Length: 121
Image (cartoon, rainbow, N blue to C red):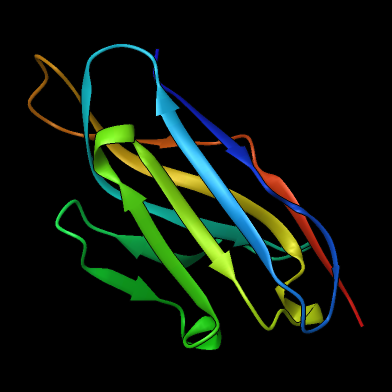
């Protein structure tokens, strides 16, 4: 069974930086898009940034210029570098991957367990 394991969350002061990483493992598979979502208390889960297998990136407007997403396709890893953090970035961050299991025609979404990011003012 494919698993996404995240690391790197924590508590930081406003203006600080954090780096989130996520690695997929378990079985034979190919990953299409990978990305990071976040969910603040009482709010829905929203896309923060995504990256295609070819390296094309997409960012939510509020993080453009502050966050950078990257991936190592060979290692099935996606990383989110977060700089100039603001209190409004506080949320649980979830890794996401569209995974096609070998032998299957279609990819399906997999999620990490979530990692808390707290930015104090």
